[in-house]
Image (cartoon, rainbow, N blue to C red; front, side, top):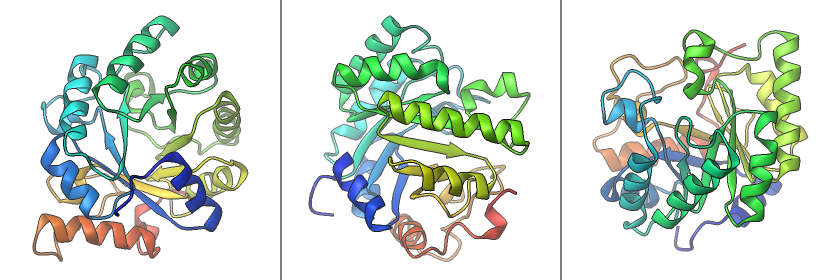
Length: 264
């Protein structure tokens, strides 16, 4: 990639039926490598709480942590669009959401990501009106792990599926630019992707979405207990850079995810 990726780039890719890629990064070195591998988007994920800080969940991560790592990624000047997670309870009220959004954007994010459904509509609209682009996140939302009782697939019942679809439409109408769907049945994710105008990024949601995202440490085979949807791209590649490029190529050619990575 020689030109900086923007939301307009991703919208054009969706319209053309061209897959794009998101990979997490938390520092300047890996941000540069991810960008050089051709990933259109970098997620500075609150997953750093688990893969960097050693926590069991993402709940302990603070806005200070997120702003620090967002700034590290931004200093690499990647061509990829930088999306930063807003951590647990940093957007529970509109005022908190504004302060958190400002902190991440000033640290170098070009978009923020929030977990939740219809209850976030007013917050999303407010952020977008004030110049903060939003990526929404539905399905398995890791910050709610204690509500779910663990990391469980969502949307398997007709009621849950209907609720996720309704949330997706409402979030788009509120002004979200992107949507992440995590750990939901592949047919449901494909249906939502077809019905939305905005690009949809999947993780454990099948191959029918517009894009795929994986945590850096997962795709490099560094995670102790990888989820079903994870493929270790280091197994058949000789370096980190080759592994990142292999993941990007696999997504774009439709070789990832495969059936064994999806839920029904």
